[in-house]
Length: 325
Image (cartoon, rainbow, N blue to C red; front, side):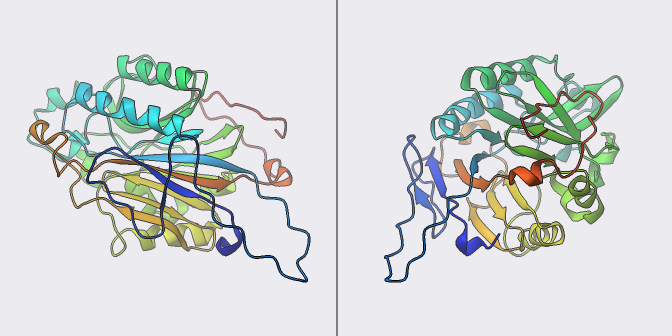
């Protein structure tokens, strides 16, 4: 789809007084987005085409507090509520929002680090996220450290609007994380009423084969909870390349950036909030704590596309089947 012809609406819900939007973004209240003005009619105007069906996806750009699960959860909860009030049907956090990407600090004692993980879906914070998803009737994609026996995984869960676990994705490209975490080895695709979602986490975006395999398995669009590098010089061209190679939208959510790339590799929206990923507890609500909820209306797959490929269920995945499945 040509981005110039796509009626996608970008808006933000400010959560800090000093939060700023990138040029071109539109603010909105919780009733919905500000619609772009209609073009002036012409004498030879054709019958307008029907607006494409869309789903509103929200990204929670939230600074980490290292190793503080309760503080991170409490900071996320009002932002999830704001996203839902703004009409979002799918809300995505950053990578490892819950533990504050504690894997980055190898001075944390190993047993302390391992205790930051929890089983999925029976861990206490996963259950609390599920309760929020159920209350707000939204899909939630959330990054956390997963405990599975002796292993720890950098995982993103996807919870349905009934609070049930639709599935989980384990990061594969671990780099420095391999000292303490175990890589995932699957590329599941998750069915929702809005199409099939592919999940990749941070460095996975640098591996074209991971994205390609998910696209071939039927992913209609991708969500990428992330940390690490960000911005137009080091990060954005990577997402643009993956979008262009696979003719697909990608939504990237990071503690300092929200980015949406289109099927032709174009940047449909981008905003950077400061240059910090991490804050201390005494910096909460300070100028360093620049957080925001961004929403973007993604085009839904056409009905014919929704049945183009069968998608086998991944182990532990509960698929939500639509009338097109």
